[in-house]
Image (tube, rainbow, N blue to C red; front, side, top):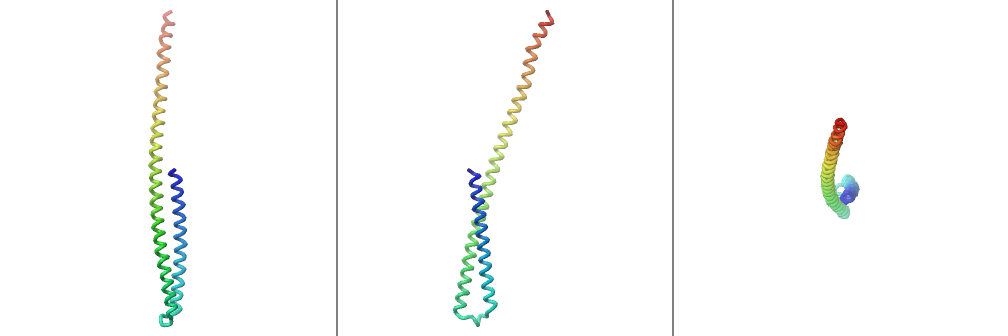
Length: 136
């Protein structure tokens, strides 16, 4: 379950980054258009309509900036969520690894004990039989 959530978080993060990138492009394009417009005319030459259009463009740029800022904050939150999820998964994997490592070590110890006990059992049962054969 955690892995699916991690993939969803990463996918959402990628979408937010792509959206933020496109908003940056749009904002840069609008700012460039405003700068071109200002370079071509002086304030005295502007009529009321041009000033209103300029103000509207600036308002659009401001709104785009606010949306971009919101998206960047969202991306940062998603990055924190992904990092937290990855840390949790790493801790879980480390705990599982340690548990499996202990099980393997315990299993190997038990096998070694059995192997040590088997020759002793065979030797002790065979010794009296050999001794009894020598006595006859």
